Image 1 (spheres, rainbow, N blue to C red):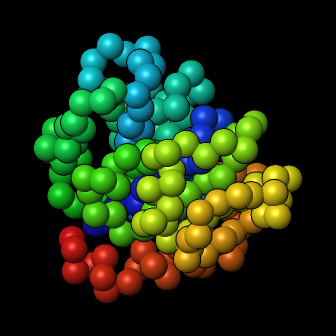
Image 2: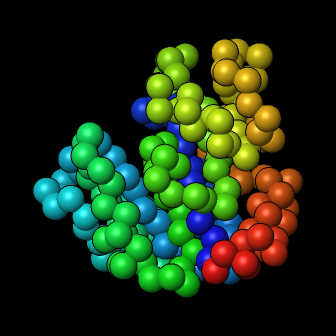
Length: 186
C-alpha cells in the first residue's frame, strides 16, 4: 500500500489538478483519493464518499480521472477522523490525500507540494508541510526564481500544467512507489 500526500502553498495552487493528473497517469496503482478540507463543500457530513464521476466537485473529478473511490473529509480545527478513513479504505488500498495537515497525523510514503495560486502568500500549514516534502511541483509559468520558500531538500519539478505530469516526474514517482520501503509497510 502506498500513501501519497499532495499539499499546496495556498488556495488555488493546483492541488486538485495535480492529484487528477497523478491518478490518470498512474492507473496501475488503482488509487483511492481523499480530500481533506476546512471548508464545507456541498455535503454537510464530516466524512463522505463520492459515488458519481463528473466535474461538479473535486471528489467527482478524482473519480472521473480514474480513482477507484473518492472521499471528502471536512474537519475544521477538530481532529481528523483517521480511524474512520482507514476503516473505509481498508489496509491494501493505495491512497492519495489532498491535504497539508494530514502529515501531522499520518506517515505517508511520499509528500508532494504544489506551488501556485494567485498570490505569493505561503500558508502556515504549507511551511510545516515543506519539512516533510519529497518533491515540489511548480507550474512553469510561475517560475522558480519568483518563489520565496523556506529551505527544503525536496526535488523540484517544473510542469507546464499541474494536470500534466512529466515523464521525468512519472519515472521518479514509479521508482519510489515501487520501492521495498513501501512494500514493507503494506
